[in-house]
Length: 198
Ligand SMILES: [Zn+2]
Image 1 (cartoon, helix red, strand yellow):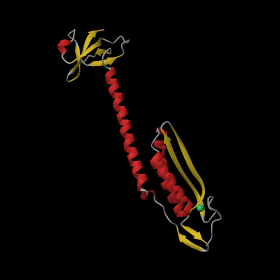
Image 2 (image 1 turned 90 degrees about the vertical axis):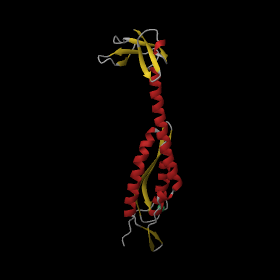
Image 3 (image 1 turned 180 degrees about the vertical axis):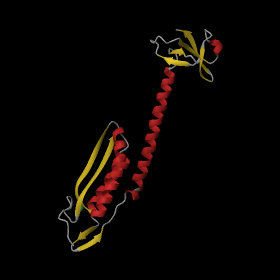
């Protein structure tokens, strides 16, 4: 049978064919990427595939840019190794040809678990961050903030420099009788913001 002339750029064996594999590693603020874009034999491409997928799974999630890239790379690598497996479907040792061996990242349980735990942990961090942002914005809406009475008797927060500002929160109390004026707004079931005319 006709052998392709291409040799593996790592071990020089034949048959070999072009393959492109990528990985990314997040370092919180920045990220690094590694690319394999060369001719490889079946064995070397399987080893490179598992190694780069392992980096994607375990290190890819740890920066904003690489978290997105790692999803793209994980899928592209699966697609590209499948194409390479179809093209280079055997290995040659001397005059003998053997079916191509396959390495699957699925069997690397440890990396799969680290990947899953990383994703869950990062989703938790992001939701905690969003929660604290909302918490601080509701704190910000407290003492010293200015409000406008809208047509529907709803209070709408406005900038204190705005001409629309009708009231300013002077204190927060748990009983409306403690407010110096009759104006107040309900913040939660047992918190009221006393309003003064602004
Ligand atoms: Zn090789």
